[in-house]
Length: 323
Ligand code: SF4
Image 1 (cartoon, protein in one colour):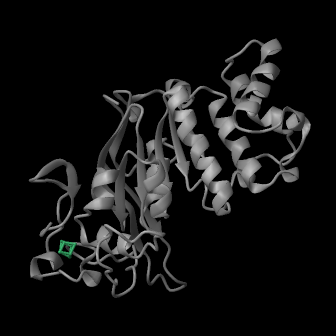
Image 2 (tube, rainbow, N blue to C red):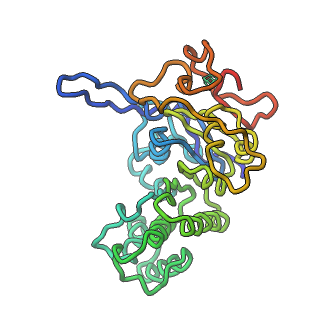
C-alpha cells in the first residue's frame, strides 16, 4: 500500500426533496456533506453506517455515476471533472461497481457468458477469438462452472449471481472496485465465501476496494481502514484494528457495543443510543449526532466538529469536540 489511488476532496452531494401538494415540507438533503478521504493503492476502505448515512451515494460519487454538487474526486491523480467525456469513459474501465442485488443489474435476456463478455467487447480488450476462453477462465476463477456459460440470470441463486457480478466487473481488468453491500442479501455462509473471494482477488490482482456495508462484522473482516458515516459525514476514519479495539467517536462506540459477538472480550461497554436517526432533510445543527449523544454539551449544538487526527495516533481521525 502506498500512494492514494482515489481521493475525495470536500465532496458534497445534495438532492432537492419535493414538498407536499401545497409546496410545504420540501428542502435539500445533503446526502454527502464535506467528505475528504483517500484510498491507497491495494487497500480496502470499509465504509460503514446506518441506512441514510450517505455511504452508497459516496460510492457512486467516487465512480462519478453521480455528479457532485461541490468538491472533487481524483483518480490516480486526475480530477475526474477535468476529463472530456471520452477520456472519462476510458478511465471508467478501471473503476467498477459490484451491486447488492446483481440480479437487478443483469439483463435477464442475456446469457451469462455474454453478460461477462460485454465490457471486454465494448472496450475492445481481447481479440474476438479469445473472448470466450477468457470469460470461461474468469467464470472458473470466481467459482462458476464453465457449463453455465449459456444460462440466463434467473436460473442462478443469489450467491451465483453475485459471482457473475464480480466476474463482470473483473472482465475489464479494473484497479478500483466499489462493492456496495455485496453480501447483505446473501445468507451468512454464502456471504462469507463471497467475502473471501473478494480478499483473494485483491491479492491476486492488486485491487483497491471501497467496501460499503451496514454490517460492522463484514467491514471488520475485509477492511484495512474504516470510515464511519453518520448523516452524510465521516465521523471516524482509522485503521480497522484501531476502530474495533479503541473507537473514539461516541457514535462508533455505540454502534460497536450493539454488535452481538461470540466473544465479548475486549469490547467496549454497551452503550444504548437514545432517540432516532434524525431526518437528513433537516439535520440537527452543530454535531448532527448531538440529540443522541450521551456526552453532548452546549458547544456540540452549535459547532460542527472537524474530522481531525488524534494527538496520540495520527492515523486515527475523529469528528468530535471531546474525542
Ligand atoms: Fe457527542 Fe459532542 Fe462529540 Fe458530537 S461533538 S459526538 S455531540 S460529544
